[in-house]
Length: 468
Image 1: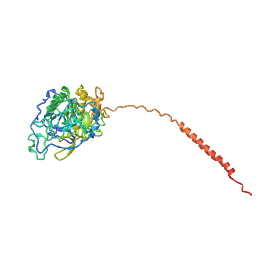
Image 2: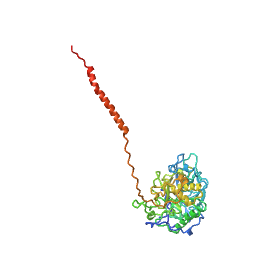
Image 3: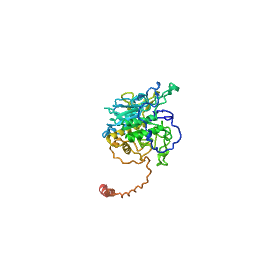
Image 4: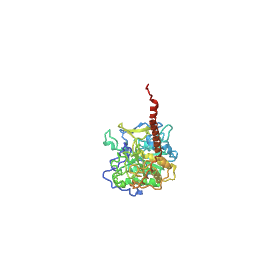
């Protein structure tokens, strides 16, 4: 991988696998044509180089929690019980290319897909407490009395481990102190092979909650292989590829949002940091994160490739360390870190893709993506670089009619519209008031007249002559 790095995209979980990509502004442009000749083989699923897991870096612990009948707040807005009336993901294989997925009773039929981190592994070790959370959000089975379940609870999960913060290239620890963290491990060439491996295995949806963030156009041979792999998976194998949009803690040179002085500028003209594989937006559905109020998460990286958004803060999912649920990871230094990031927004959209593929099996991968984007809760501009076409809506994605073509990923320009002037209000009808006032005046007058007329009578009959 040379000097390139690769990261998971949880807001507080950084899997730095090497040094950064460099510096300097990017000469932004749309992705060039992909060279299909760079397509890598899908196997064997082994690390590109020898690796080691230092003894002073045990697997991360977790904080248990979230069990019980209450639906997690992040899932309430998705209205999953209503969506499950249409489909539950039956018959769909979803590949999770991540840090591995630990076996869990709520992931029945978990398929080991290979390991590009540890030689001889099969992808069912999750030292980083990341891939299992991702898999649970996609396909955790329902249990009586439990509010949490995966978006597509009847989908099957295939796990392919491609990265880990707790591994490193063999021998890298020779110059490290006993308290130093490993370098992390994860090669872009391995990601390209993992994408092809998942597609060849028949995955109908591929979730990639990992990003690399170069600050110049990704044109290396390894990046070319990754581009060829996503094109192959999407076109040749008809797989829906869902990828995280990236976080500002890993993509240090974040892209700007909308310029209020030039709101209709092409966002491709203002890219400071590329995010791959999201960059290849012709083949990848990129997902940003929103908070509990539907606002873009502060850590979510904007970009011209963002397609939709989903809840990505304070996530609850399957615990890789036990048979229950978890609300946070505990680092080896004792730091408790809630699960937040575009890493955890993406799998919820992968779950929706599995639902759509289950309900509409004849739709192509591109048509599934279009349906998800067209039925999202759109922002006022129609599209913006933070949440794309809007927050995903599973019920609408499974039930609404969609247009044949979406507008391009550009904010809609301001429109001038002459509103009709309101008609003059009709003159008020004061008849009832006038009648009441006149009647009251007459009654009052009669009372006064009657009172005055009583004076002579009282004087005549009320005074007596007292003379002898």
